[in-house]
Length: 390
Image (cartoon, rainbow, N blue to C red; front, side, top):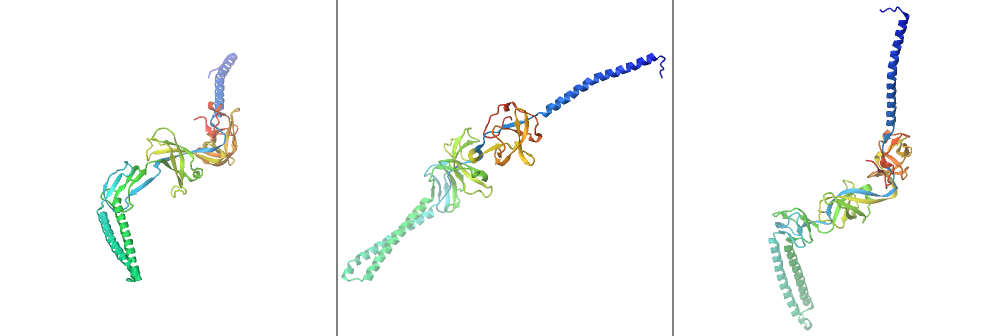
């Protein structure tokens, strides 16, 4: 252990040690102070949260519903023979266009022609009986006034003539029926159109009325779609619609609602709707998928907000409204009316021009400062709440 022989030496050593410690303190203190300032600045920056906002527009009574549909002909019928028989020839295939009178298929008409021949022979026999009965009646007519024939015999000959004439008419009708049956053995198109499906082949025996093919009649083209039951009540027959093809040209076609089913489908609980297209382009082919935009009027004005703008406060649905001057948010209770395809309909609470937060509402609280996007400085008012940043 070191011994100090002089008090002055000891005092000098103590002062030197304190100066070294003071130097260390003077060096560390500014660093700690700078770190504390940066932490406070970082916390202040974190408290101002950037948000996505939307501007509440004027209440809208009209909405646009968009559904997908299929291009279909207005009339599509199953075509078949009117008599039974064996198909011996089919002259058209699926996808071909036919005109009025085009031969589609033929049956084996051998038996039908035999039936026609038999009917014609029956007509000849009936005509002979009619002629004989007429001659008997004509000979009896002058004998009755002279008393050479009784009134009963005269009436009997007249009845024979009437029966023979009726039998002849029946036989002639059977001839016409047999001739029609022979003609029905050749299936012809009664309307112009497009063959969409073939369900019978040569060699197949078909019964009367059995479908041989499906024919889509040429003319007006329609879009078939299904509308949910809660929206079908808003549709009006004759209402205008916009139609666009997914695979066709990117253009909007004019159309109108022609038919709304009176009963919902038992499986899907949707209503079948037919939309007529006024001037279909050549690229619009049967079976294509189309997008249909329907405009519906709810009758009562309502404001639609995005679903992400709603949260819950004190057991009630609320939204956060932004004060652009102070840059803070506050909760505003609203009432929910119903759902919509683009959000939620609110009945009261919001006013046109209000700026609401549309994302991250679960991280906000009353009076919290937020940073608005530059686009929200001069917001554009629309018919519903629209996001101004993406």
